[in-house]
Structures are given as C-alpha cells and as structure tokens.
Length: 299
Image (cartoon, rainbow, N blue to C red; front, top):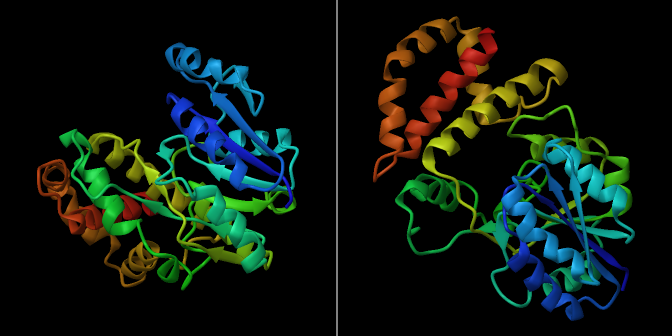
C-alpha cells in the first residue's frame, strides 16, 4: 500500500490525544505513515503542550513564527509531506473509534478515487458547556450528513476537516492562500476540483468534531464566512450555486434588496439573542445570513 502523510494544522489546541490515537491506528495502514503537525502561531501555552510530539519517531512537529491562515498552513504541510497520499485533518477533531484509518485504507482499493471525503459527526448527548449548544445543534442539523447525501453534490458538500487525497492532486489544485479570513476556503477548493474534472468520493468515515466554539464566536465566524462567499462571487463569479447567494441576488434583481436589508436591520439583535438562547432556531440564522449577504453585496 502507498505511504500516508497525515497533516494537522495546529492553532491554540492541544492535539496530543488526536496524534496518539492516529499513531495507535498506524498498523492498520499497510504502508509508511508520518504525522506532521504545523503550529500556526498558537499561544505559547499550546506550543508547550504540543512540543512533546517532536519526541515521537512517527511525528514531525514544526512551528511557524506567526499565523498565516488555514489554507497557507495546509499548503506548507503538503510541501513537507513525503508520501503519495495525504490525510488532511482539522485540529479540533478526534477519532470516533479504532477503525478510522482501516476504513480509509480499504476505500483506496475499493473506490480508486483520488479524493475521499470522510465527513463529520457530533456527539448525540448535549454538550456540557451550554455556550457551545448552538454550534453543536448547527453541526448535527446542517453538517453531519451521510455519504449518500453528500455524494448527491460531491464537490459542493466539501469540508477540509477530514479528507484523504493524492498528493499530486493538492500539488495541482492548491488551496487559495488569499482567503485569510474564516470561511469557504474548503468550498473554493471543491469548486477548483470540479473545474479540473477531479473525482470526489464521499465515505461514511467521519471524525468527531469535539472542539466546539461558543455561540458568539460561531456567529461572528459565520458572518465572516458569508462575507467571504460574497467576495468569491465578486472576484471570481463563484458561489452562484449556493442557495444563499441565489436568494440574495434574486432579491436584488427584483429591486427588493435594499428594502429587505432595511427591514431586517432592526431585528438583527433580536435574532442574535435568540440564537444564543437555550432553544436556537436555525431559521433565524438563515435570516441573519441573508442580511449579511445583502450588506456585503451593497459594499
């Protein structure tokens, strides 16, 4: 079996348990394995926790002097990697069981696809920290889809949180380092793969998203992601296939964009507070995203 480089960009997160779990499953991959962790300008506290990883023979641990962003960090990780297959993981995940690498190993032989997307799952129990409830609720309702559902739009249902791909694919279709703010760098990568005619196969091999941010941070990140989506539309005519942009642009064409934006403005704080409460309604988040998209299109 060809060798595997596991690439983990690290930012303000202790990844020692994730790396240990991956190392324990390494025998299930019948080939060479290396685990590469690149710290992207974390606080010194987290660097001290993760530096012990450099003592492992299977692990390459390096630090960047300052934060370069998730896309740039992943491109640097790929440049360090020495194996023909790359497993890209976020640093805020863990493995749900002991067969994670084994399922990917089997999928390489079965699918012959150059890009495999494993997906994401969330715990079935409520988070112990009430502040993270919105992120958990959103993830379970809007992100934790089965492979069969994701495969219906394989290049759009694309998250870099957990993908296995050939190294030459990432060398051909690099991540866009100009997207330094939060959101849609993985979406654009999916669009680039589609434009290049590269096949994407979705699998039921999820990672467990266990690094949930608080609701306030999630809403701020979501607003940034909407602004990034509008930026991609304006700069490269991308994103027109997303429901959010379709609705926003249709309102503009009908001459209703300004009126909708003005009407929604006063209720923005109310929707924000409702989403941070004990029973968040995701429809309210959809309304906020539409408002943010209309504002970004106006600028």
